[in-house]
Image (cartoon, rainbow, N blue to C red):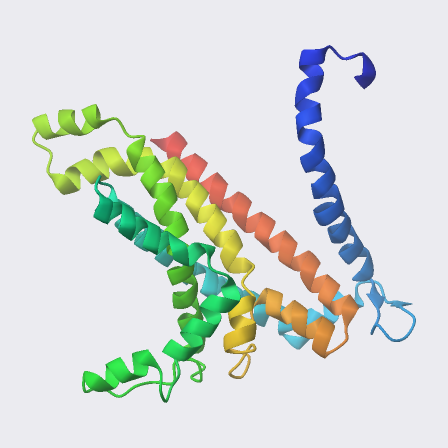
Length: 293
């Protein structure tokens, strides 16, 4: 039966999905396919594109740029995902109560999430300044030796990760709060009657019922961490010595600094593939764990 002859009820979901599918096709699938096509060419935006096949992928691999961007992004993502989930869950457990003060604190924490990335980066650029930053003054006041938080290759990436955690923890908190408030109080009461303590109630009641929320928070945090750009661009510009050159910033460098559009497009394709694989592996791992219980 042709789409035009579908009954009204069967056609309604297609009509509701149509605007979203059009937006995805125009702003996601088409750019991705265009990047895959462009990755087969050597193009500097100034001269005519020259077909080189898979040469861009080979060059990225042999130069080490691909492995460096991936390892840097992966380390950054691991810290951000674990840190934002742990902090968000802790805040949700602490603020899962009624009252004006708790509501004010929840709103204050979530406000960081709605502030632009550039504003957050500028704020923390001042806080982490090695000479006159607030954190440096605090460390000196405690009688300790301050570090160059953004100038030390061993610290810069983790400093950016902490900034990212600070920004997105409120989002994780709100999602965990929603999950906590969906747990029936009767389950806690039954566990308390059985003699379960606070930790036992969390481990045997709260945590199992929060696992669907945890999967969603972990997946969205992973995507956000892989897409980080603004804080890197504003705070470190990929340095020092490329210690904070994550995938998206590496793409930016290839296009706007090196004028290598083909290599940048190759990075985009690899980046999408890695993000897709990591997300699927994450979901698969959680589903297998749930099936084993």
